[in-house]
Image (cartoon, rainbow, N blue to C red; front, side, top):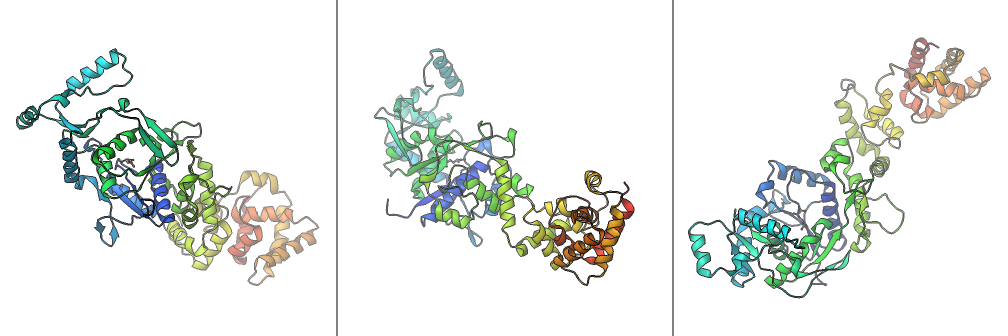
Length: 486
Ligand code: GLU
């Protein structure tokens, strides 16, 4: 198997949405496949009908498509490969479980829920270390089984766990993990509704899909001995395992909805870029071995190895995600941001005003290193789209003195002389006004910023003036002189 190129899968159950932990699993599988020239497969594990949620599958697929982690193989859907879907493969699980029954490795069990509950209570009373099925139905004769089936009794099919040496799991991240066979229950493989359980369907599919590496969350480690036993009983080659560390809240409790969003779609809706989310999620348990934290997908593919995945839990730090999102926006080409800004404007109070691409590109250039989300173009710099209708009171108190209006009138005189000024022309004009007035440039810079933007922070003031243009700047200064009373 060593020489074969790897085949991995992401195998989510459609429970309503894609969890960020699921995205991390999908991403690590994808990176591992891409890094080693392997194949990435998407398989939908939907055999638990009790957990069926209307629309969950469509939602899951849509979110995966948005992330761009597209499978390399699977049933064709349009031009793309779609996922394998377990509920469409039921005969395969049935066929294979029959092999186990014939070999005595699995058996029919007719025990009623009442009997199972009684058994459980007895075992709890007897303080047994492990609550397990007592193999009651293993000892039914073939005829008895047949009669019960024919008379319509409900049954499940169970794994027959036999005594033997410890089950050893070789895990790339966690090293060797051993489980005592006596601790493993006679797991249900086929439920009374005829659907396979996760364990059976997962192992049969991993085998049929020739999966070489099972990369999944740590919460599945306790299921792995059952899977290893199934491989053993089927006589199939066991894939390599890599169980990824848990995701934790800042207080190191397990990542939960209560402390923040866990659905990828919520992050998408909040305006996080998929590039940023992928970058961030990649660092939840993996590092490139240095301090680097800003990555594009290509670099991640290049650097990713399972050996660099940590064992200990990974803390989900929203500040870091915000920083990464800001970095990605900062590094985007302004032309690539343009359609998003246009769209944001279209859905804003400024939808009826039209701005030239040229103007918007300048705004993007000025602001893209100062924002966390695209929506911040409007939230933090709405003055590019309309004149301010109020002025920050704190800045007024600090910067707007009784003599300021007089100073600004002199400044306007200097600005009037300019012809289509660039930022350095505004700078020269402002400095010469300051000189005439015999004041420091700061005494003009802060009031002028307040007058044109209404606030005290933003891009460089001369850049700001250049973007707004001479006429607009003068108009806004005049309005401010009228409106701001000290
Ligand atoms: N269906 C399981 C899940 O929802 C897959 C676990 C595995 O990868 O084996 O995560």
